[in-house]
Image (cartoon, rainbow, N blue to C red):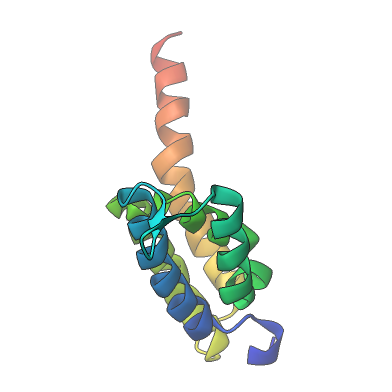
Length: 123
């Protein structure tokens, strides 16, 4: 897999961080942009146009950013981890399969194992 097969994580990160600031300001300032109340659908259209690469490369990440979920440090930490791995794939340092396996094992331990243990303890 070459870097051309993977979306540019550096551009994703740049757009994500810029959008995150704008979105948070929008919600904190009660939907006021440049001293004008901006309806949510108008603001969304503006974000979709301005951060088109992010929207196309990762619609889910765009949505999380748009709903201000990335202001939560735990959510942002996961995104930073994802970007770290994408940069390594993009740079040819590691294969996508190796990253998928690593993350699969990590999240299985974090989410699945506790559920299985809880289930076993209730029997």
